[in-house]
Length: 408
Image 1 (cartoon, helix red, strand yellow):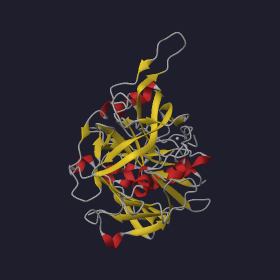
Image 2: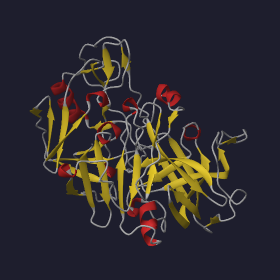
Image 3: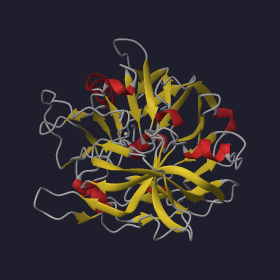
Image 4: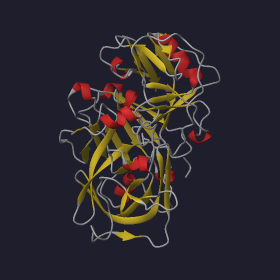
């Protein structure tokens, strides 16, 4: 969920619905791109069909590595959530793991959904909420105002402090946002909030530290490093996890580990791309080098149309004439690889398409999308779960670097 200057993944789910076609469409002129994604946008929102699937949660196995919390799968790799305990007594919240934002937030006990004039506000859905009634350690920061804006809706509330437990790690009086108003679309999501893993400079409210920086400040971990392994439902391993303070060497091949500078000026995690190959052929892009945001909160790869079309054409894909999005044969064996830090990382063919049993053509997880200037780079892309399920990702705020390695 990459964040806007005021912000799922993520992204609060990916709202550009991935179409399911039964026959290969004829190639049509490109349709207009979807609305621009912004750097505070928690992802590209889920279509209605994916929202319905997303009610099913596949729990993660309990990690054996220190300073680590499991990451469960929502739907068919639609969202990735960690179970986080907040308050006194502690209660469990389902939090999207989002490297595309830095905010940590949940809903308030007084949360409502505003309605048109003359109609009473609605409640905020079937979620746990936080406030002084449920937590004796809850404190509201006097005079604070906290807001968020996502492609799926908006929220507003205040900055608070309370105790937070992420896996085995305990934070006392961690500052974060509590939403007192939400738009209806957000209340219908599976998650109860977001755990942003971007840098603190990306957070919306002065004084709000990222969860990683807060762990370092309270000396719970020594280094501001967070490392992520995202699981794939079809593999049935359910071994997704987030490790704080270092890396888990049992999850990746150390010989393939590369470290590249984080080139984002906004507190996001943005890596330079050396090259892209489709079916073994290097693709040439006009206008200079490309970069990509590493966004665990997004369930798609979002790339501007000209670049995306070049990739899809090289893969043997086509454009759906009804919406301008891309499809590949459902039995495709296409190979797509991104070279970063002189190391090629190949996307599993299963992650290139949305499975549609019985269909001939399947929607791609690569969507054409114009990225707004708040991305920080005119040639920037967003690489979400379809790419990140294929790598081990490590983010170091102190060194301002991004580490990538092949999984084992």
